[in-house]
Image (cartoon, rainbow, N blue to C red; front, side):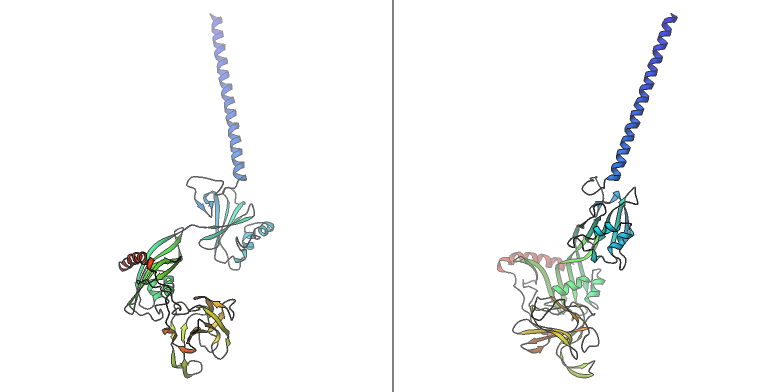
Length: 426
């Protein structure tokens, strides 16, 4: 009996010893596998660069076309007189790498056009502050340039935008500009209205109590409103007369029409610049502030800041351009047809490249407001000649462009009636 008990004890001991050895072996294998996984994972995270193409993660936040949450982002601003090379040098990039990056084609990005005040950003790996991967320069609210600091390449990107419809209604108390502000609308819309109604309404003569109504769209980028607008319909009540602007596409061209289907665009603009006040009108007897005597003033003076763009009121040919020291200063003269000629005086400078003999289009910039010649302050002296005789520029008549055709009248009527009802309900 003693001998059988000894054998049973020896077998149990050996079984326990095998189990212990097996458990230790499994633990060693598990630790080894875990070490290989960690080493491999760390190596791949250092060597690979996450991009929009190589990293696909559900609900990843993208900015500049990159998975932004996988980078450490340092936001910055271009400083006055700072070049792109100086910016990159400040981030510790080598001179050779900076040179490579600044050799990108101008068609992608012109590095000479880096402007002070524009946002920029440096993107680095999350686990290494000394490894910048991308530099991003925001060209404007919609466009940006991405500099790949690893591969020395530059790409250009665009943020997606959307258009949001809005409405506005206001009454003029002092000026259309202030009326827009009082109605919580962008004053830029005042300029757009002056463009649309520029052939039919004299915006330099609007009065207190005149009313506007607008249906328009404004562009947004990432919930940021931009100063980009599209007028979808407008009405303007001036001097007890109601004017409408209804957009409609005819012959592959979108123009604004009134409620009867006539185009608002005519052969001549009402004024050669945007929305500034008249300081002197057409008269046969005006006291000249420089000469200190009365004489005829056969034009209209528009007071405006120096540098304000001046437009040709209609298409035509430049027949004179020069300087008159004791008179109009820098001036341009345009022949529009066999009947009408216009002159623009006291310009600070001419449009770049403008020459005698050039054909200019309606609303093409021909120069900029100044105070050259006999002048006491910045303004435009604008004159119109009919068959060689001066006439009041504010009374020039303009024939509208082609009206709505017969085949398009039914479609236009539906669009027009719908928009007029909406405007009336504002």
